[in-house]
Image (tube, rainbow, N blue to C red):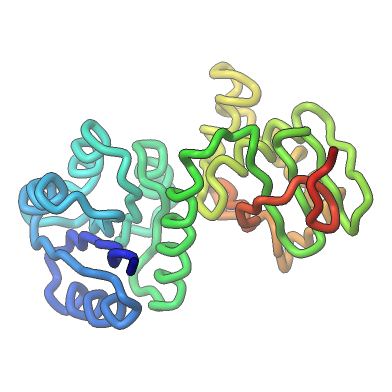
Amino acid sequence: MPTEPQRILVIDDEPQIRRFIRISLASQGFVIHEAASGREGLSMAIEEAPDLVLLDLGLPDMDGQAVLDRLRARSQVPVIVVSVRGHEAEKVRALDHGANDYVTKPFGIQELLARIRALLRHRQTASLPLEGRCYRRGDLLIDLASRRLWRKEAPVHLTPKEYAVLERLCRHSGRVVTQNQLLREVWGPSHVEDTHYLRIVISKLRHKLGDDPKSPWLLQTEAGVGYRLLAEPDDVHGPEGKTES
């Protein structure tokens, strides 16, 4: 039985941007719904129940951050903010208020497609118990069920804090997790300003996992905002792709 095409709602007041996105994404098999204002977008989000929302912040009738807040009050649909507002504070605010990702205009369509696909894949695996998930990237395998990691089929030892940070990045693989969120969840609310704690742990993780900060293949930094784990969900439970007994 054929799978229904996934639906994307584009909330943006610029007709040329909507047209560019519509043509590009429709060619990839997506069904596109469009809204030119915040209120129209909120109404369509209820009526069409899209699989993902692309949201501009500079809307004519209301601020996109307010649209995001109202979306999150009624739905957990993945939201990618697509905006000319590239300031770190705007990105952090949007991500902390529930956006799943942030793309700054102008953008390349291949980058946008990659972000969309990553979020839709994550949504499909989100219903699985976290402890039953595995993540793979190259020669690295992360098994959350056993709290174990392998690199080149050799086990990797992590400290509790290192594992806690990596686990939370796994929960949101493919999307940016803000520094504030990681510090709050791993160290506690009183440490949200202690970004040096997080930088030290990320540096140690990169060293142990063989990730080059100048050319990262696993832990991607969004300067001043947070970190993105590039590992993909997998269904194996041990090195060499075999379920461990």
